Amino acid sequence: MNPYAKLTFSMSLMLGTTITISSNHWMSAWAGLEINTLAITPLISKSHHPRAIEAAIKYFLVQAAASTLLLFSSMVNAWHTGQWDITQLNHPTSSLLLTAAIAMKLGLVPFHFWFPEVLQGSPLITAMLLSTVMKFPPITILFLTSHSLNPALLTAMAITSAALGGWMGLNQTQTRKILAFSSISHLGWMTIVLIYNPELTLMTFYLYCTMTGAIFLTLNTTKSLKLSMMMTSWTKAPVLNTTLMMTLLSLAGLPPLTGFLPKWLIIQELSKQEMATSATIIAILSLLGLFFYLRLAYYSTITLPPSPTNHMKQWYINKHTNTLIATLSSMSTLLLPLSPMILASI
Image (cartoon, rainbow, N blue to C red):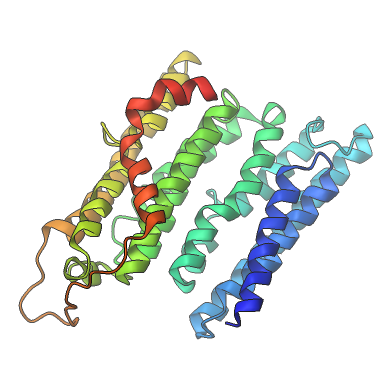
């Protein structure tokens, strides 16, 4: 892709995200979401592979439908209440339509079907943007309207997302699809606590973006698209593979790593809200995700490939250290002792 075109699309992504997260009016939030959609679509299809073109078309159609629903929701609310302010979503039908629109934007169950397919057809860096940056504006809209949403509906969507994300990820062999179902599962954790503690949802999202970004950048460095390719990636960067294992275990939520912090706080908040049953169910469902994270860690670090491997082994190349991967990996594993400071900041 032409570097000027790539710069234009990247700047448009930043512009669209900034417009949406800083707007109070529904029309400006909608405009920002549309700019984001139009900017990321060429980045998905830039390889010109049929799977990439298919992913771009699926993404565009789903996002266009979600934006239409969001605009319709805001118009119904304005018709009945006279308010275009995002925080003044008072009409129950508008609230229901908005929940469906944002669920489509994020890939929450039952609107999750497009997400694994789009990630599988995208390059790894674009897949990272779809899993992190592109979810920030919809999460912000959920944060601003959290007081108006239906608790029972959100809890049901959250538990089914955690269940389906863990269950569908069990038999996957493609790393991008595994991370897509991991994203669906984590969205369930963020959604279930949204109404009771929106700041905790944002903190969980930030930590999820840190861990997922580190994993995608590491996979991009070692060019690991499948589990069988991860077995031979240790020859390229042994230390990087070790940090990948730690980051995967952190994403699974194992103590004493960073990923344990949001799960612990969410279960604590649900217990305070007398939702012990929901907390127990979602905690048990996270064991499904733990299985495939452990499998990824096992393939990348512990397993040696068989002698007649189908992939050419690459010798270790002493490249310059990638500062971004080092920073994100460190944050993904070492932030738990700083949890009092993190809690004071939210």
